[in-house]
Amino acid sequence: MKMELLAPAGSMEKLKAAILFGADAVYLSGKEFGLRAFSDNFTLEEMKEAVGFAHGHQVKVYVTVNIYARNHDLENLPEYLRRLQEIGADAIIISDPGIVLLARETIPNMPIHLSTQANTTNWAAVKFWKELSVQRIVLARELSWPEIREIHEKNGAMELEAFIHGALCMSYSGRCLLSNYMTGRDANQGACAQACRWNYSLVEQKRPGEYFPILEDARGSYIFNSKDICLLAQIPLLDRAGICSLKIEGRMKSAHYVATIVKAYREALDAFEREPGNWQVEDRWLREIGRVSHREYTTGFFLGDDFQDAKVNLNSNENDRSHDFVGLVLGYDPDEKRLSIEQRNHFKKGDLLEFVPPQGENFTAAAVDLRNAQGEPAEAAPHPQEHVSIYSEKPAPPWTLVRRA
Ligand code: SF4
Image 1 (cartoon, rainbow, N blue to C red):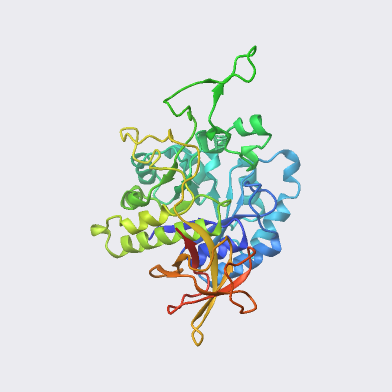
Image 2 (image 1 turned 135 degrees about the vertical axis):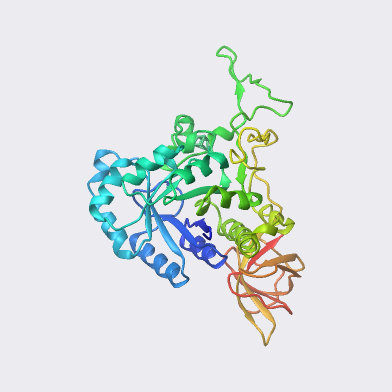
């Protein structure tokens, strides 16, 4: 079976980026009942528009209803679930058994995907959820591929989804109080401040302001500072393990991030579909995923405990990226040979820019003959969101990302 590429859609722009750059399905949240409190999230009206856009491109939309509900949350839930059905969501993602029960009663034909927050780690748990008519399990990130394979062999009909790219959490699938304790932002309500990644020291009560280092090495202590997971090179093993859907993490990441990661995995997956026996990871895909903001990459738990790949980043708690996202192509005028660009970050005349179209090869070009929205020569675009144009022999389609090394 062809594996699905599932991408995060934290806003309408990110949804369109994910779809145009090659996702088979997207997941998003409404304003209510979903985690990720700080992503933009969709009103029901926006969700309807999002579903229309996605279905127009043969892409599925899964809606998260994955809060751990308190009694008072349940009151408006059936009505909300009925609305999700009406607007054409393809599945709902749930963590709470109570919400699973209410969804079964209210919208019995709607496929249910069990969220990774439900921590499914063994084949018996999968059987349990199958009896409650759950159609898909988003497996816990802590599983190795032989464990996933065994789960698949014992539950052939159950769809299995796995996180393959993005932030890892040092606690079991986000069940953590650290962020809430340190900052008041609750990870279990989708508002994690990633407090686990900070650089910690020790302070003795009678010596305020004196920080005693708790050293793992000369750089400090990053005991909980997880790397990001990346399973791009593991596509054949994901297939052998019986995974049907490959999930990219990051509804709060930028449209540039989503588009770049989706495109790299799309190309890698298409190459695997064409020639599974001869597939090898290509440097250009790895280069691409290094260009967006990320932590050092790890294969997490997927290759098992025998694989000595440190999951903790001991070098830094900062993100790396080699390129800045500076604009989005709006269109190309073939007569004038000019590319119109909506500026997102500062760039200026003469900068060497890289263009990343939704499909096909990237190309580079200098920002020659930069003009402002009025068509006047300019040294730089003054404001974010400003429309500018540059001269280019080469056309680029709308939604092409523009970035600078
Ligand atoms: S603080 Fe760290 S461990 Fe806790 S939920 Fe957030 S990312 Fe996970």
